[in-house]
Image (cartoon, rainbow, N blue to C red):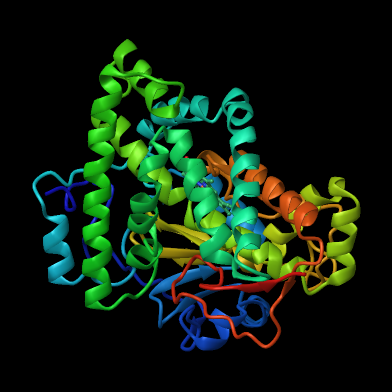
Length: 430
Ligand code: HEM
């Protein structure tokens, strides 16, 4: 069992929860409220104006909403540790914990929740894996799969559920090819990685927890077997590159770290990109003039997608925990305080973004959003996510220029503290 050690990838534990004194306390704010799930921006604007830093009694987090405070916190990794970012927000049931207590379930922290100096040691190798050359190798595959998924949508009529027919499979298949997993395993891999975010950031019931935990275990075993295969059969993929690095210097990058990087990447780079694609359609399709402009001129797509990341980010928060007693804007924050960094609030700060509630594809500073984080943990997959988004939207504008949302549908969002995207999205064309 490796869920209770300091270097475990998943820590099944009750995290430290110190409570700062002398700061405003909000008795109502929670990301699980219906109105927050439907649209978090009005309540974020309200709390940011009332008290930009406050303690949320319902969440048990110190909530920080202003961009400059977020940049300072992300930038100070000695004081604000990322060790809590993969901790389940709510206690894990005994049955789910028992599944993950399997002797061979032992992925270790390697990136988002790994601390210095090991984080930089490992990131050197993962960054090399996300090279410009690797993106070039992947680009034709992303285009091909985007077209094939549209072909399948069109072959089924003139209406589709976008998440299951395009938004979820596409980023999954891309990350699997990037890692090197064979196409023949896509179906089972996609089923194992669905709804994974609920385990850590949501509030799933016991049955769901057990289901997800079983999938995590199967997926970990699959990753280990795959890495073992690549030990003797190298190919042009990330796993082979990491194994080459391990062979060249086993003390610098351990074999368990290679297995754990492979395990973590498909989660880090899958559901969030699926949400990013759905959120893009939610921003673009109802604004017909904007969609038509992108259909007529694809060079507008990159900035339009930066504006999506600012306006309707698939990730609206992230976490840190204080290592030592500290202070933010005069508020005393004891060691062990859980900090909720509201990326969504900062991305809509009126002092930084003029008319933040207006979706503007020509916004000059759209790229100044903080949706990929900041500092040493800045998103490893930002370049890949941008490439995937651009190819997906370009393919849809070219192939289905009359695409629109099905009218009258109500959207359902998975209750959680961090990620945002509709569970289903009905679209039609023709
Ligand atoms: C639109 C899509 C995405 C968004 C909004 C996003 C957002 C983020 C954020 C906010 C962080 C935390 C940064 C910090 O702590 O400062 C992060 C970290 C990370 N992301 Fe992404 N991400 C996206 C796509 C991807 C993809 C496609 C991959 C991989 C294929 C990926 C892999 C990672 C990894 C490995 C980390 C941890 C990096 C580290 O700790 O050094 N992400 N991402």
